[in-house]
Each structure stands twice: as C-alpha cells, then as structure tokens.
Image 1 (cartoon, rainbow, N blue to C red):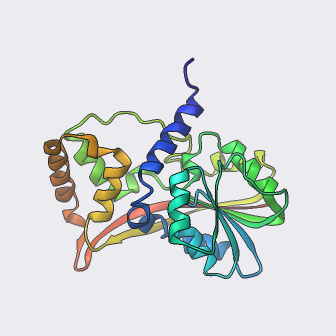
Image 2 (cartoon, rainbow, N blue to C red):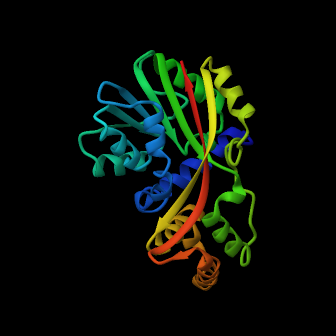
Length: 265
C-alpha cells in the first residue's frame, strides 16, 4: 500500500531529527534559539505560568524557558531527542509525543511555544486544534518558522555547494516550509478557533566562531556521512568557499530571517 503524503513527511522528519539528536544543541539550536527570547517575551512567560514546548528537540529551548521560573514541559516525537533532553537537563519534564496527540488535559496550559516546528508538521490543522484544546481560556500561543528561503544565507551556501556535486533531490517536507504570508497561517489559527493572530518578520543572525555548527548540522541533516569521502571533501571545500563573504573578526555571521506568529484562545 502506497504511503500517504502525510505519512511520508512524518517518517522523513522523524528519521532526520532522530539522526540529528546527539549534535542538535551544538548545531541547529545555536540558530533557532535566536527567536526564543522574543517568543518568551511576547507571551509574557513568568513563574506563574505553565508552558508547553512543542518540538523541544534535545531540550535546549525548554531549559531556557524554565529559566523564567515557569513550570515547563517539553515534548518531541523522537525518542532519541527526548533521551538527549532528559540526560542534559535534569529536573525538567520531557515526554515523547506527537504534537497531534498532546498528552495533557484540556485547558491545562497557559502558554504553548513552538520554536521552528510548525513548518515540519505534515498536518498543521490537527496540531493547531490540539494546541487550542490544551490551552487555558485566554492562553497564548507563539511560534517561529523560517522566513523566505532566499533569506537563509548559511543554508544557501550549503545548498549551492551540495548542488555542485550531487543532484538536489526533492525531499518531503511540511506544507509550511518557506511560507511567509499572513493568510496561510491565519487559516490554521481560525480553523482551530484561536484568535487575535499576528505575524511579523524577524531578521536574525547566525553567529559562529567556526563553520562547525553549519557543516556538522548540514552533514547530519542531509546524511552526508553516507557519501564517498572524496565527494564529502569536495562539498565541504565549496561550502567553505561560499562562506568567505560572511567572515567577521570573530568568525562568521550569516543573515537569516524568521516569521513570528502569535495567537490567543
């Protein structure tokens, strides 16, 4: 029986982020954490709040939310990610769970944060409705997704180098990858009976002392370690060459953009 598109996306995402689990906090988290302070401040997270961190990965974002004093729970669909999170951050509750079936009671959470997760979802409608279910009345939801694809400079440097030596195959991904328009997200919000939706663009930088976070992150994400060593070396040489224009006195600085969404119950 042929897989559904949603199932193909789900399996691809699970396989990819399970593979990236051991290196995530040293690679992609150093970029995605740039949006987290804004998500926290816009939802007024404080020590009186209960917070759900959807797609918590290896727990770095959940730990930062917990530093506000809030009672936070992190969920992720990858068992290996959750194990990494539990190992690195004792004293925080982490649960393996699909965002389409959140293991919490109705009306039990003050704030839901989804940092760079929504664009990975095969069925956003289901997840937004689950978020509405677990939020308390007047609870708040904030999320971050990638901005326009052409504005992700570090990824552009990698994809150009990769394309020089290997065909850029079409990988399954969620329907919101690279989507930046208000109407698309507002539809998901409205269908879930959430309200007062706002969407804004945030320009960010991915700063690093060396190219290790970018190269190691892309190698894990793309599973490039399966390639012949000679091909890997050629791709890496081209990545380094493409990054020359982003050099600074302290390493590298890559312009990026994100879309930040807010809604309430």
